[in-house]
Image (cartoon, rainbow, N blue to C red; front, side):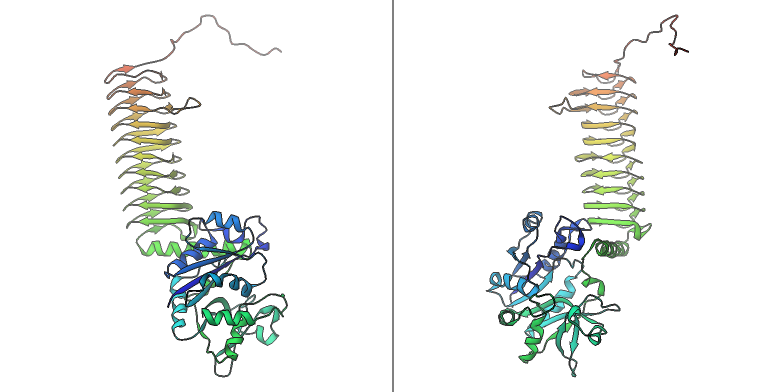
Length: 454
C-alpha cells in the first residue's frame, strides 16, 4: 500500500496581520510547515506534496531543502479544491493522507494509526472530543454510531453546535475513490468553497463505512490562525520538550522558563537554569551547568563545565571542567580546551585556547591561537583586522599577557613570555623574556590644571 501525503499550506492567514505566509511563522525556531513535514516524513511515505498559494515562492525558498513536490493553488477555493490540485502528482499511489501546514503538533503515532485504517476501509477520519468545540466542524453520527456527515460550524444548526466531537481535518482515503468523490462536490455553502469534508456524505451514501480514530491528546490538532494561538502552541510545545528532557535526566530550574529551538542532546545530571534559550544542534555532556539567561546555539559543551549567567555561545566547542562567564560571548569557531576559564565581558572568535588558560576580564581574542597555561590580563585585545584582511595572533604555552595589552597581528608571543601591562605589541615577543612597549612616563613640573572663567 503506497501512501502519499498532501499538506495544505496555501492559506493567507489574514488574522496573523503579517507579510509573512502563515506557515512560515516559527514554532520553536522552525516554520510551522517544517513541523508538519517532519511528522509526515516519520511515516516514510512514497511522496509528499505541498499545496502552496499565498507567498508561495517565499514558502518554497524557506523550505528548499525539503524533498517534496510543490503544487500551486493559485486561487484559494477551499480544501477540496486544494486536494484536487495535488492528486495528479499522486496518480501512481494507493492511499492519500491529508495534513495541514498550520497544525504543527500532530504526532507521527497518531498519523500512523489513521493510515493503518486505510487497510480496511476506503476512508478514515481523525476526530477529537473537545470541551469547547467552537470553530470546528461537528461530527454527525447515525443511529448505529457510524459517521454519516461533517457539518462546518458556520453551516451548523444549534443542535449540531452542541455536539462535542469535532472534525480535525485529517483524513486518509483510497486515492481512486477520493478522485471520484472530489469530482462530485460543489460550493453550495456559506463560504462558497469546495469543502473536503463533503466527501464524507458522498462516501456514506455509497455504502462506505467511514472509520475514525482520535489523537492521543487534543493538543495535537490545535491549529494556528493568529499570533495568540501561535504563542499558546509555543508554550505547549516547549512544555512537551521540557518534560521529555527531564525524563531523560536533565534538571530544569523552571520548565515554564525554558526554550528549545532546535535539538538538544544532553547526558545525565545536566542542570539548566531559567530563561535559557537553546537553538540549532547543542550537546551538553554529563554534569554541565548552565546559568540563567544564556543563549546556546550549535555548540558542544564538555563534562562538568559551568556556564554562568548571561552568556552567548554560538558554534563553539568547550572542553571539560571549564568555567565560562558571566556575560561572556563565544563566537563561531571558538575552541576551548579542558580546564579553561573565560570571564566576564570577554569575547572570543575563531580562536583556540589551550588547557588551563585563563581569559578572565574585558578581553577580545579573534583569529588567535592561545597555548596551555596562559594568563591573559584584563583589557587585552588582538588587533586582527586592518579593514581589509584578518591576521593571526599566536601565544605560546605559559605566556603571561599584562592588562590593557594590544597585540597587533600578525604577531607571535613565545612560550613563557611576559608582556608588560599597557603594551602595544607590533613585533614578535621572544620566549621566556619580558617585553614592554610603552611611552616613557613624564611629569611636568609647575603644570596647572585649567579652570573655567568666573
